[in-house]
Image (tube, rainbow, N blue to C red; front, side):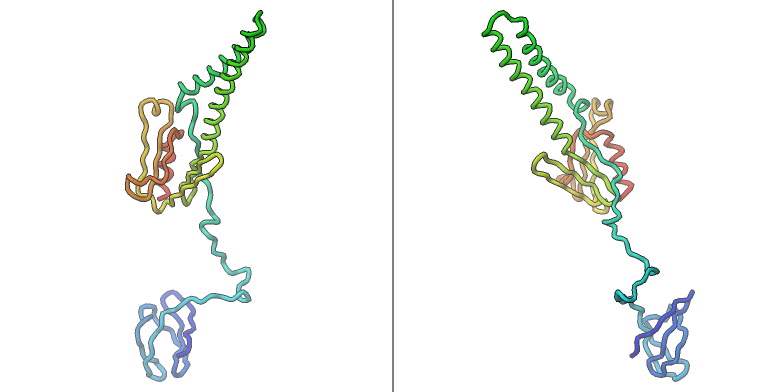
Length: 223
């Protein structure tokens, strides 16, 4: 049987009879059924049209390009955990530790004794380095924790040296949790968790994110 040639119209397709090779118009509702040729009266089955792969020689500038969804992915929102608003007492404590260290070091200019001067410099330097080290490590942890929302997925990247990435496609999201205590609601932060299964398996779970409700609403709108 010859492959049927088609030219789509509003309600009909053009087929060629496999017996007498006459060209005829076939209604779309007959596709997949058996009909008789109006010329030779021989029956034949109206096959379902099938697409075939075009060779490179057949593709020209008029051929529409199929754009991959992954290539067309766009980042809509990004967020990092906040520092001061999430833990103000910790932030102030580490700042005070550095200030106290600087104060001890500065007092050595008015000291009349060598031994107290060495002790003050040593203790002040230790306090300054401890405060600066804790603050720097905290800042790096926050900076290298990124929650990204694209038009296709939500992803969480964590880690200063070793990086871990967790992704959940919007089509697979089954659970979105936003937790805010009284203080977090007052300062505009909260905890957000996103998963593709039940509550016991949270692929994305990050604390102290600014405007968590806005992030959750964006994910819900993209489902």
